[in-house]
Every structure is written in C-alpha cells, then in structure tokens.
Image (cartoon, rainbow, N blue to C red; front, side, top):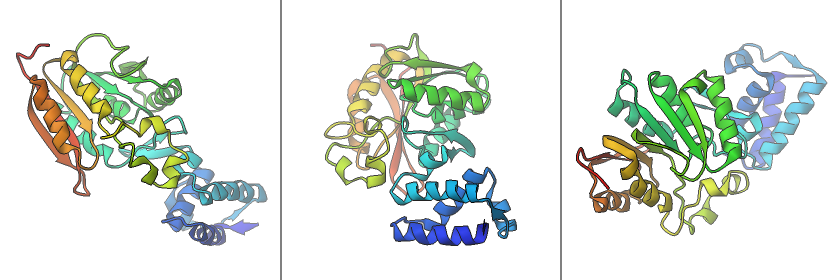
Length: 288
C-alpha cells in the first residue's frame, strides 16, 4: 500500500514531466475529489495508506490529466462562486472571470430585489443561472441552451443547489424558446474569433465543446444577435449583461449604440485588468 504523501509526490512528478503547469495543485485536487475529502484532511493525514484499488483508480485519473484532460472533467465538477458545479464534456468549465458578470448583475439588481424575470442565454452548466437563483430567491430564472446535454447538466446543478423550483430550462437557440419580456438578460456567449481558436491550449480544443467557444471572424456573432433581439425581449428599463473577450469592447459598445434602444452602456474589467463585462439598459421608452 502507498500513503498519501508518497502518492502525491509521485503524481506531482508524473504531471510535471507531462507538462502540467500546476502539477502539485492538480495532483491534490484530483486526490481530494477521488477520495471525496478536502485539502485539510490530506494535510492532516499524509501518512494515511490507500488501498491498492484506490491507488489504481487515482493513477488512472493522473494518466488522464497527463494526457491533457482538464482536471474539472476528470473530477466531474468545478467550484464556482464557492459552489460545486457538475461538468462534463457537454459544457464549458466555469471560469473565475465569469464571477464578475454575476457581481455586476447583483450590484444592479440588488440582493433584496423583487420578483425579477431573468433569462440566461446559453447556460451551459447552469452556473450563472443557478447562482442568480440562489442569490435572488424571489427571482424567476429562465435558462436556455441549444444543447440538450448541457441542459441536463444544468438541471442537475439546479437540483444540487436547491433552486430548480425557481428555474425553467428551455432547449433552443438564444431566445427562440422563451416567451415574454425580462428584467434581466445575462449571457456568457461564445466569443473566440475563428482565427484565434487554433491558438487556444490543446486541453481546451481537445476537450471543451467547440460550439460553446467559437463565434465567427470577430468573435461577436452571438453578441450581435443577443443585443439585436434583446431590445425586444427586455422590459423598459431592463438590463443586459454580456461577457466579452479581449479587444471586443469597442465593437460591442458600437452595437449597443447603433441599436438606439439602449443607454447607460458600461464595461467592467476582470481582476486581471481585461474588459470582461458589457452592460446596458433598455431605454424607458424604447420600443422595437
């Protein structure tokens, strides 16, 4: 049998040799998830011996990581907003910068807001919609996705966090399946330009769903559609929040301005200093 200390040391070496940028962290996170424990327990009991079956199973996980598979897919989930979200290859892995999007929605709407109608376009794992439902318990949250597999994951995450009763899950492209007007439109749409996609890390291109990443020559195919259709789906005074990519601030601002139905157009940088969130309000008298 092998103890935790020895196993982590060996696995860290293997992952480093395989090119992992964070071999020790990867080894620890995978072992925590495999043993269904936490980092404190690993640190407090480094001498704990694992069974041969546990060592074999964990070694398979390490081999998957060595071949480039993201830790979140191997472990079956990812922490986001201090909550655990199931993920698989039907959905993108939630990124920390997307928390900036949620922060802006909550800042504008207020945690004590009334019965808001919110729609999360292209929900994927449901991370955005589920967090908003938890933080705004009086809100009704509609989530849409073109992928049935993604919606299955989103439903399970809503069940896990006790908010499925606040939410509606619609299969379809953008707003196609949704009915009525909303107080808030929020989306982290695909925003990788076609010519940038081949430059992404192999671990992203080989494992995460391409259709959830790529968005035409300038990366804003979906922003155009959401901004264009969104004005007709927002209540007067309603707000729209979109995640954006590097260098997209100017063209997204121009899209809002050209529509002529939005005001209070603003942007928020993520904690790395990159413009990450685009926000606007539908004018009080705005009509299509």
